[in-house]
Image 1 (cartoon, each protein chain N blue to C red):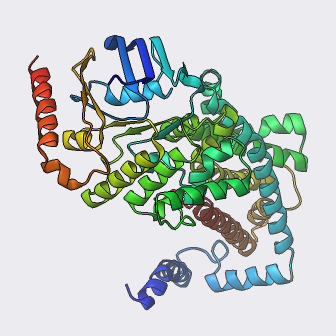
Image 2: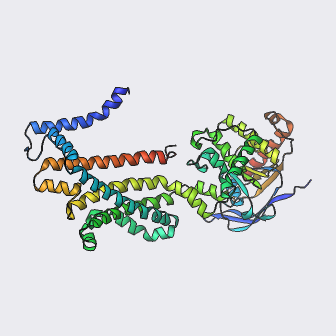
Image 3: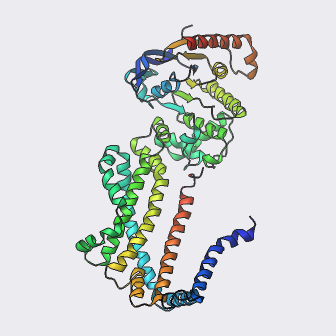
Length: 252
Length: 253
């Protein structure tokens, strides 16, 4: 592949998408009140970012997602490692972990409203719970499936159980832990946006999207969706790059 | 001359899934000698050194190294698969230093000891590299240096050449012989290649089919350093023929 195709090829999809969107608008298939043109949408989006409250809303959503992620990860990683290093302990909580990992966190929103009310803490708590359940599982799994040979190598060199844990098990489980963290940050963003829609709030992209729908301010709704998508994409990219640099050995 | 025993195994028993692998097994391995272990597939050659080094538990019996229980012995161990035994998150140097770090040796002394080791055996390696950036032979060399760095009382190697090409095998074999000559470190190497087993050894431990017994502890006392040329010597050929004959008989049993 030469330079031009390497840079141009990835652009084909997005450009095609915008063209199809534009085409649909031009052909009047959908009423303009439901679907503004891409140009109107992007123009509005930049204006809302620069002069309106879009940036503030995006920041609120992002910070809620990040705080929830941090809480879930900081609780989930140590607990997951503890579960993973003790097979009996893990077996006894395995069902719980699998169950809550499989339960959509959004299904618990009403429950959390009962306990935490419709506060900011609530949105963070429920997203943190979602992050926690996936991080715990992946960390535990990473520890349990660590290659035994390196653990044996450390053991024969006279390493204590703590040294084996710190110098070998931790690194062996890191790739799987990163999988958990990557899934966790996506989960966090999803749950925060859903929570902003349904738990009374006056800020955040979720709130903005649902309000745009209710008052039929669709340009604002589409802009907010795109911004939410950009945040999700950037977070994912950030984790991919971190993953590659941090776990430099996993490709070898 | 009778060998002075260094490793003493008495009444060793080990069963795998109801099948007896070792039953009431006795063995004496000499001090200051290079022993190679050879025998049919599945006779538990690797299991034997794994039990001696505490990597695999056994059901009954005692293993003593240098007069003490094997658990308190300082052991150097080289795994068959360097890829799965080195730590890829560390650089080559940190890998070699790791046994010293475990023992709480100060950093400056760790480095000093590694340099000393490299100089003693005339080994040139880019220790700043990650292990996975090194060739297979270099990685196994790192694994051997790691096994030697903490001044072990005994060195175990589990088919250390099986993942290497022939050129590298010859090179590392000679390095190993050099290490042995300079340190006199009791060395036990599991091999699946009879020629190699005889070439390296002072004593060839020929094992039989399971439940595993000793067929013979064959002596091969040719002077070191040995070179490829000795493989044509009458003594080498005779020892190899003898071992091969015993091995064939064992297979027919």
